Image (cartoon, rainbow, N blue to C red; front, side, top):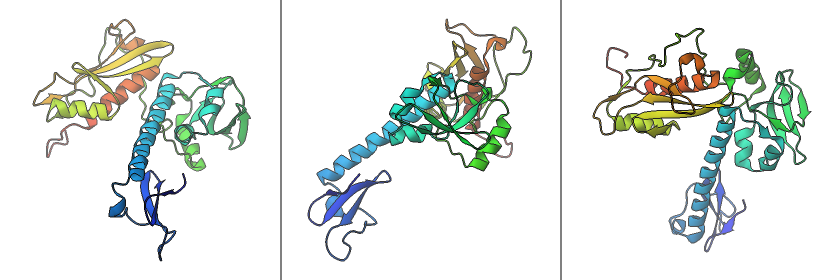
Length: 287
């Protein structure tokens, strides 16, 4: 974005998401000022730029949420759609360097470009840049990626950085042969908070939905929707703690642990672990 006139002797612009000013006269002409002059703080052009900056922040956050949703749900994304949104810096930032899979499920590459003609350019695991033109791609959840540890090492060598947490996302694998009748995980129960408000606020800040007495996370896993839920207590409690973790199927019924899919399991455990991590630590106990 270019510089805009803002009164006598100044121009303003958005620079790295903030309103910046520069002088147009005198010794400092053409140089960006360290801070916004007092005379400009209530200028209409500055107000408009501030509003634009706030909108851009919301737009960037929305792009990250959408791409994260595609990844968690393993939804096929039309290549033409990626090509259409790629020129937008916010979308490009959210998508750049994500691991993608096209027609061959065994061929994983890191997304580097999407052309207007619907062609993707990815860096494959041999370090070569290749061109793909599948009708759709998926952004695999890391729990579904084979040889994830090796992929992480390769990504570090390649200098991969991801705005949407994917290959370095914390993952959990469901243990083999859970008891058929078991419906809850107790591993992250008992994390105490000073108030239920604080526990709910942490859940919301982490992007989870709070409904009734639960923090929830809905995942589309293997064509079926499952919702992980952690009990966080009724509102207005002076003292609160994390409860057990369970999963509910499309009809609302509790799923036996053996029927929970790999992505739903990992994301539910990730939510429960994150809530437990924010607990109050009793001095001298480490608990």
